[in-house]
Length: 94
Image 1 (spheres, rainbow, N blue to C red):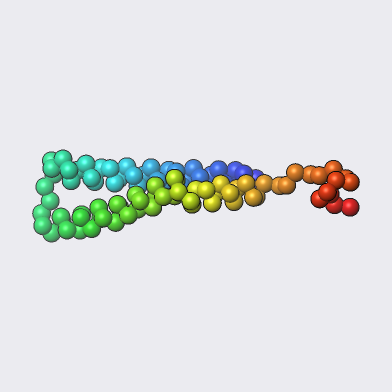
Image 2 (image 1 turned 30 degrees about the horizontal axis):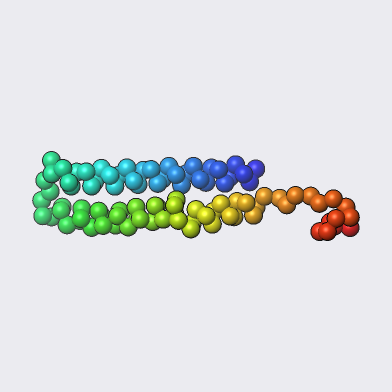
């Protein structure tokens, strides 16, 4: 049961990462392409949003390719039951 919880958690995180990265890509493309013009009242909040999303993209990349993903994998490995030892061998329970 625990294994399915971990897998569901990873799927949710991956889906959320895809949504954020897709939104970021759309916003950056719209700014760079210049096909949409923004008034000065809207341009400044959009630049703020772009900066905030740029930080989120860095965090997402850091999670999937950095130490956070390694920690998640380590925790999943630690949650697995230890292999049984044979009686009479070191580490065996009496």
